[in-house]
Structure formats: C-alpha cells, structure tokens
Image 1 (tube, rainbow, N blue to C red):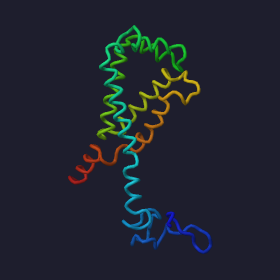
Image 2 (image 1 turned 135 degrees about the horizontal axis):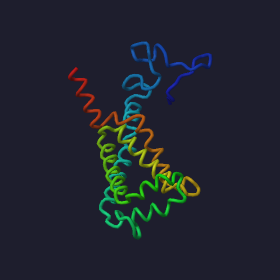
Image 3 (image 1 turned 135 degrees about the vertical axis):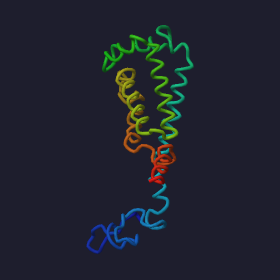
Image 4 (image 1 turned 120 degrees about the vertical axis):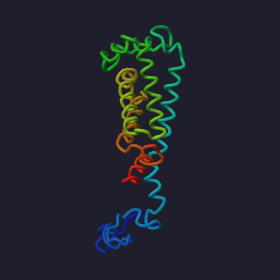
Length: 193
C-alpha cells in the first residue's frame, strides 16, 4: 500500500526528485503519471475538491436571498419578523452598533440589498462567474451578519454566520477553476492567443 512517499535506505524521504516515473526527472511525488502514485483519483480530488462547497454555498445563498425577497413581512421597517425589528433587536449586542444604525436608516433598502446580494453571490458561486468576487461578496455578507446579528451568540460557535465566513475563504483564495463560466472563458482566451 503506497502512502505517496518512499523512504530511502538512510530514512530520508525520496520520490520527490528524479526518477519518480514522470519521464522528466522532476517528479512531484504525488500524482506522478496518470496511473502512478496519486494518479487519476488524486488529480480529480484536487481538481473538484471545492465543488461541493461551491454548490452548497451557491444554493444556500440563492435560497436565503429569494426567501428574504419574497417575504413581505421581512421586508418591512417594523413588525414581527421584519428586518427593521430584527436590526433593532440586535443593535445593543452587536460588535458594530454603527453598522446596525446605518441599516436602520432604511431597513427595507437594507433588506433588499442583502436579499439581492445573496442571490447574486449565490448565482456567481454556483455557475462560477466571477467566482472570487462572488465569494468575496459572500464573505463580506457573512462578516457583516456575524458582527451584527450573530455577535451575541454564546458560545460564539452557535452563530452560523462565522462558519459561513470561514467557508467562503477557500473560494476567495481558489475561485472556481473547474466546471465554471470562469474556466470556460479562460480556456477560450487561451485558444484565441
């Protein structure tokens, strides 16, 4: 059973230099050749490892945005279940009360901005269009909600917005290099050069 490395006679790690089966003398030690150590399975797992996260966050944010946009009670300045009432309820316990005050100047506008923002972020993430920008938008939405709505959660890990913020970070860093509009556009640009 191979674990992606070999031990030389002196106990040192070998298999990351010449003679690892790539034919170039510059093996990577992992995924050398299509059927070597790592092989197709390792290549596929590296390539598509963020796809489940993209699908989950994309669908979740589209659903959350549409849920807000279609709920007339939520899109009200006051009343039970309204965005205005929710913001007034968290104002004194938020990390940045000034951010809540800004939202309270126009609660309906804030509600629509969050709703449309979540839908745009979700679509961009799901189809991989401007994926890093979409992920950054998702991270900023999650950060703002964590600092306002979820801040008073005790213990802190009960607030789901912090978890969403952390989930967006790999997509901010990696984007959507496979199975995405971004990848198709990049491939098209390479073909025309």
